[in-house]
Length: 354
Image 1: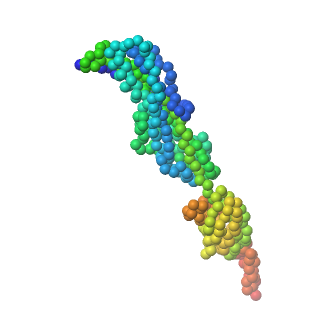
Image 2: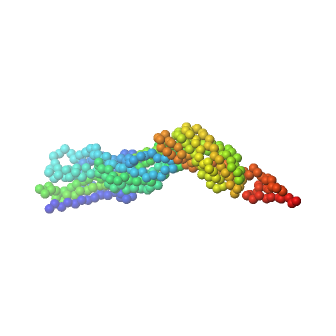
Image 3: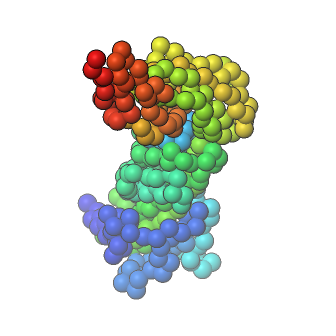
């Protein structure tokens, strides 16, 4: 029976440490170009060109709204090919043993395009997009294969992220077969006796740009507030809303949330269609409770509207900043005296005796 030995040469930097390798060019890049001296124990019949070529794309939509926290599903596919062979032998005739060894080496060399133990790291150069996940393992991919399930990264978009495209960088690191050497004693009817196969592995790296987009949308600000709100009284509050975003809206309706010391039976106002930069005034009838004090207050509001794609949307919370003043009835006549109601929520009364 033929004796067959398989000798594996592995680089000093193992696959488990690939996360520490700096990113390189977008295409396949070997980390070590030279073979060590101790690898030359057999014959090298071919030099092979080519290697893994891992592409990446997002599964599903790549458009999101500012403030979103999402999971990006990324599919990987290995499109690696052997681009050429170069014979390292001269043109002299060769014996049957060398022919057999050449065939064996060529068979092993075809595995050069396999990406082994892929590790993926997603980064964002823009602070408006934050990648919350660390390195992800994607297994090994032979040429023509793709991941059976996508790798996943959690990503957060800033509440203040402007609309537009944000390119993320996916750094890929993997092992691949760099070179093969074979040797043997004799060619027999059963094959080559005492055949040794030396496999040298290196680390390759690629980076792929993954574009994500923050959608255009309307944004609202209260740009002016008027009206008199007094303690213990009902008054009219006028709030001017301006569309400060980059998308027009249709049929905008604003609703306020009247919390203590405010109350209202009139919590909605129609703003209508608002183009970018356009303003509209909402008017609310608001009652101020007797427990209020003279100071600035903020009333929460939100706007429901229809976007340019016909979808119903609700804005972020928009605050209406207003001032509460003392009651307009500071002095109240009584039958035999008067009351001062300007201090807190109690009235101090003076009653004349007859």
